[in-house]
Image (cartoon, rainbow, N blue to C red; front, side):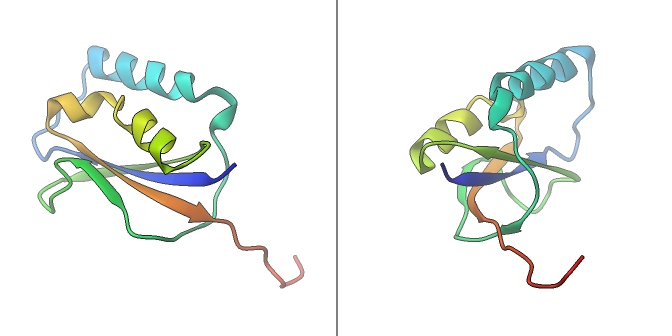
Length: 101
C-alpha cells in the first residue's frame, strides 16, 4: 500500500480553538493504523484548497492509502479546508539507508 505525505497549510490569520482542535483530533483518529513513519517525499503534489505562500503555519502527516484517489479523499476531510487552509498530497517513497546505524 503506498504511503502519502500531506502538508497542511494553515491560513495566516488562523486562531486555534477547541472546535478546530477537536475536528483535527477526530480527523487524525479516522486514519487509525494507516498513520506511518518518516521518509523522503517524491512526486508533484496534488493541491486542494488554498495552498498559497501566505500561510504562516504548516503541519505534516504521513499515512498509507490504496492509491492517490483514496489519499485525496482522506485529505479532503481535513477540517481546515473549510476554514481557508489547504492540503498538498504527495506520494511518499521510503528510502532504505545503506549506512550502518
